[in-house]
Each structure stands twice: as C-alpha cells, then as structure tokens.
Length: 207
Image (cartoon, rainbow, N blue to C red; front, side, top):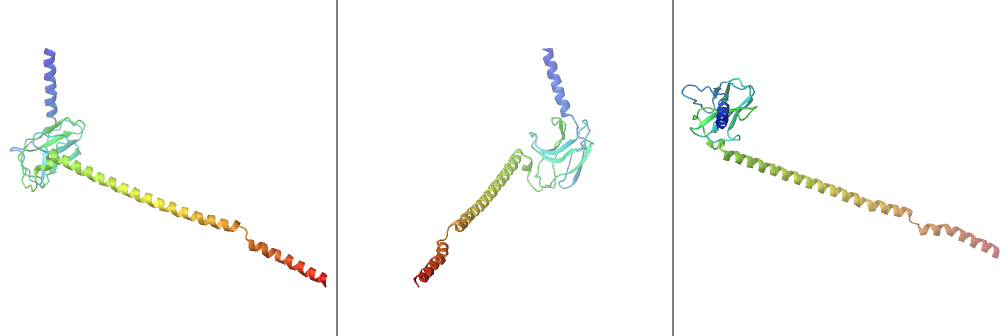
C-alpha cells in the first residue's frame, strides 16, 4: 500500500516539475500586449536546449493549436515578439514555452487580453487548424490533377510521332518495289535490233 502511494506521489511530483520548466517572469500587473507592437517576454531557463514560443487561446489546447511566435530559439531567458493585428478580442490569451528536446516539458503564462486587434480569434482554434489542413489537401489534389493532364498531353504527342513514322514506312516500301520490278518495254527494245538484222540478211539473200 505504501509503495503504491509512493509511486503516485512521485508521478505527481514529476508532472508538477515538468509543468514548472522555464517559468515566465510576468511583470507586475500582468501582460498588456498591443497588437503590432513589440513585446519582450522573459522567463527563467531550466532546460538547456532550444525552445519554442507560442500564443494560445483558452485552456484546452493541443500541440497543433496556437500561433508560433518563435521557433527553436536559444533558451536565453528573453525574446521579443510582435503579435499580429489579425487576432480578435479575448481575455483568455496566454503564452506557451515548449522545450524542443522534450515537448512534454512546457509552461504557460497567466491569461491576458490583447488590444489593437482587428480580426477574429478563430485563428487559434482547432477548427481553424483543421480548415487550413483541408485547404492544403485540396490544393495538393489540384496539383495532382494538373500533373495527370500534363502526362496525357505527352502521351498524345508521342502517339502522333508514332503515326508519322508509320506513314513514312509504306512510302519507303513503295519506292523499293519500283526499283526491283521488271520493265517490259526494256525487253522489247533489246529484241528490235536482232529482228531488223534478220530482215536485212533475208532481203540480201533474195537479191
């Protein structure tokens, strides 16, 4: 029984320790970012490898959610980011820092709102992510169709070349037959001098 309790406490402590990696140094009063203006984020590095900074919305997020603000940057404890104006209004934005060498090690900042936004907040939702993936898949399908049409064009061109070659073959055969066929007129022209000579000799004998 004690061993089970010990294992449970150890597992809970490991989870808490993982969530505490690279904690943000939040200014007094919290974050008050303005879209389109630079904002310097600070944290206490507890890991050695590079990290990724993301902007998240809400509590329930997945690894595919959020906007990547900086990818694979040195874990130096500070980085300046600029939030896009296309974001929408909201009071439950937060920053996330992820250890690139172990993505299970991450941490969140307290929630905040963003001023100066002009768009909607759906950019950060899982639905928006799925829509983007669907659009990409559609574009990929269009590219495949284009390649198929291109292959068809090449095949047609090759067929035309083959037909042109085939049509020239009977012409060559016809020329060969003309050269090898006998000419009856040539045989008659060769026998005419002998006939004339016999006639002359017969006439001389008669005289």
